[in-house]
Length: 324
Image (cartoon, rainbow, N blue to C red; front, side, top):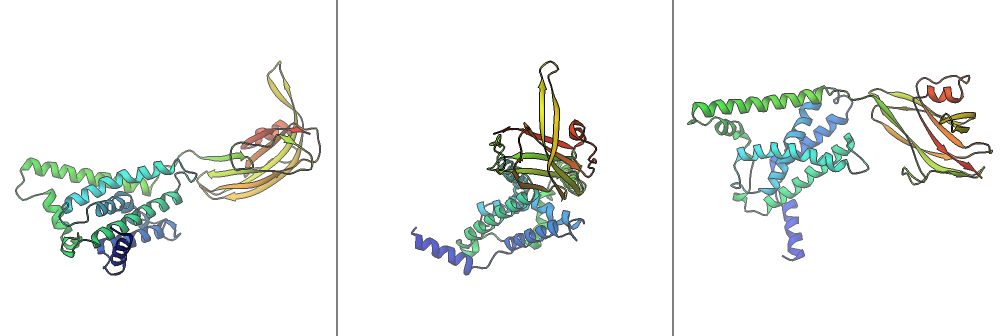
């Protein structure tokens, strides 16, 4: 097949053929689910569950099956529905696993974007594969026959009492699984409450921290704060220079002097993380450590200093330095 013929087929598929009703419904449903996730009026109501649940349990698998089996007689409707549910349950965790190895991590925005792109790509592939088939061979979702087809597939007229009993058990198991999923989505269990606090070097990595300091020069780095406290949090970051001395007898470090350098206040919503550019600059010598203290809403007064102030902080980090 030449490149021109292939381009002509793509053009004919997407500009001369009617878009299938089931795939159009998928696109509309995805858009509605994104709106339910991000619109403040909807994301605190059961509407979120109604639109998001099919995206998790059915739609990705359905689009994959539609792309793999574009013909009407490839598989029957019951098999399409069953495979759609099973593949969706497998696809969503695999997307999450892949995101875990990316800089974005397993976060809501990353999952929504990934699932949406994955599903829309499959929709385009499925539409193209159907469009190049003769009209009589293309799969078309029989919306009016779905209920009767499922009933006949699960409870056939000539089934034995044992088969009917097993079918009832299967239906109950599916209903219990769906109900449990809805409950978990609607009432998620809160995990551990914590705040992140970390330092990054000039390149945004956990390396290459400034250690040899020339007074008066700026040393760029980054300070990161992440809120996982399940509520809005007001933080204060303080930077102190200190002179410490290590006692080999007691195996402990003593702070001899500690002077304020900078401070910053910020407010973060739950699950919000902010990485703040910071220029480390010292104006005088006589120090060997820089302290970074994070306070959550309660900041002690100036009378609290030294080791007591470090102990009063929510998190503390430090850099060992040599001033040239």
